[in-house]
Length: 502
Image (cartoon, rainbow, N blue to C red):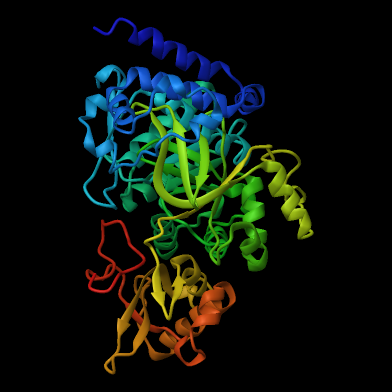
């Protein structure tokens, strides 16, 4: 028996259940987050065998790391140079996996799946991110809420983690009831239609393309989503504000800043940050002002924009990449997940927006959802692009084109972007688009999609506008049936780009 385990778990659960959200989200004002990260480093250096060896290999004496400035000189760890090089037990405190009561599995989108031990105490900081979304956005503290987990269940991290966190909120007193149909559409329709009328709102939690497929399939089957007062919690993919508007319209949403939220999460460390009504209001403004987005973020694509609690996850920016430090079953210090992006203080964000004549707080319902927390913006992995005439083209640019009126009505939102050689060895920009179920292809539809994609690439991507000759800008659009096995196989995480030979 692990004699200390019950006391450790009980103390963590008691702290979560008894600490109001407002108090939890103000801790970063009481203690310097950089000092907290420094304390985590010393604790991990003393307790985790793999990290001790890592520091020794890099000639680092933990005793010499005394200040936040010293902390910033520590070597960066990655999955390749640290996690995959050590036995799983050595990545945990004391070289023991036993205090971790569950192991999650990463999606394997970058290679072989990775195992991530965690305990119930690791779930509680992540549950706080769900609490922030449910409280500030959905008012679930006062509304009977059915939370429908539409992430895949099993060993993969999303579904089980989400279900656990929602149950922690229910234990805290939120009137939330959880049901777990996973990614089985028929079960989702059944539980929503049979159970939904007993609740004041229904929250669907899943990957954006899958939730859209659920909503569209339901509409095709005669499901009227509006009476269920649908809210959405999403993770895993960047989506456009046109997408948010489109999906919101299809479920009867009337308040885009409060009816959906995206989570920035990883199997490595759970949820690192979350969209808030404030961040959604900002992102929606920037979607219509690509000049402002470019000035703020330095790129021609609109990133995911979330707020985070620096008392739980300490972010740093280095050479355009994000690093974070945080406690978990496998504690991570200055970990590079290989996401490009950056951080912005709350004050700096408000000042920058004021320079563009915009105050996002005017878009909100009073102070709810307007917390003074820092922002992190995330572009995702840099290898999810294609290069065409020297211009980097991002899926985020293309998706806006296929979510316009005249196109969005007959597509699913999925596509594959690639650069191909034509018969004369000239390169062409190819976009293979998935048709919605029951929809057919036609030359008129191909031309409509191509025109819309080109128009919005020119509008949103300055490299495309500057580098690509006018006669080469129109993409070659191919329409494929829903679930096409070559481009859109069912049950597989979708990839929006293909490299030559891929």
